[in-house]
Image (cartoon, rainbow, N blue to C red; front, side, top):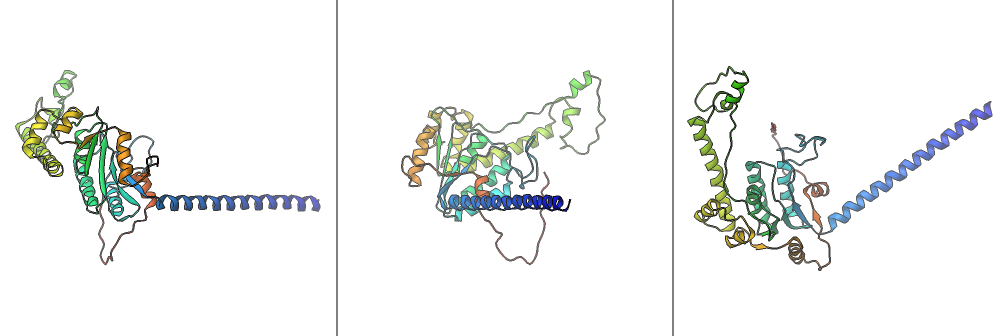
Length: 309
């Protein structure tokens, strides 16, 4: 019996030791591969590529972006701005490519991203934009680039801003649904769809002022970046004169109409690669993993910023 127990304990101990050794070896190999991959990728000159396919929250991991996503899967606006600031000083980042046809974020966020890209340009590094077609918001962002390229079959949807307000009062009354709504003041439009059948004069006025401010800001920034007079932008938007690639080029909304492979050939020359060499594109997520950013400065006082969205 003693021999049996001794043999059994010896076997169990041997298995545990073997498992421990395997775990240690696998951990070491994984760490080596991870370290090696990081050093190899950061050592390679790359181009930061902005696609902006997802909505951009104010703060990383602050909101879930879609069903199944986990918090933290989408970078926040503040962190993206910091990544662009870091890339401007990073010798491994040769420039930025904006490849955006449409965006899922608001105009205030776009303006801050646009300003961050403009600051990146001050480093002397290039910024190119390419798309098969540009929505108005995508073009607002892309217009800050040094050069804007468009697919020969594409268009630039520059047409101004508008809004649609649905009203439910009439339909709900037919269903026998009524509301007791309390509000104070004239410029209180949140409940109008439930208590009116059309926009109030006050709501129409505030909406018009808001949209005029938005389009005025957009036109000012695009005019400055593309060197197109404001009156000419008004004409282009009124006549939808970016509705095909030929018109977009004639109106100086874009610099050239070329296909993606031709664009990459230009890009290779810009970053001094041979014709067959692969361009090392880094997404914001890639660069976030590779960069080691630290907050600069000495802080004697601190304050908190609460992101509510």
